[in-house]
Image (cartoon, rainbow, N blue to C red):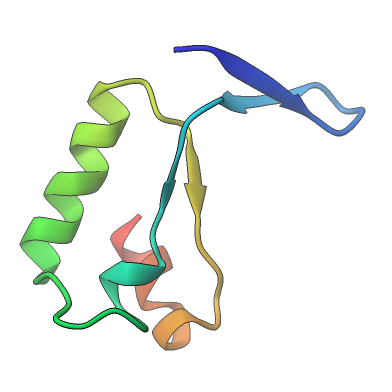
Length: 66
C-alpha cells in the first residue's frame, strides 16, 4: 500500500482510505455493527490506515466502530 505524509509532523497514512460515514449516517440502509466492523478489519488487512470519519456522524457511533 502506498502512503502519504500529512502535514509537517511526518504522520503517514495509506494513500487509499475508507470513508466511514455510510456506516451510520446519510446512506441507509446502514450495515449492522458486525458488518461494519468486518469491513474495517478487512480494510486494515489490505493495508488501510486512513479512516475518514467525524464525531458528528451519529454522535460518535462511527468512532466506536473504529
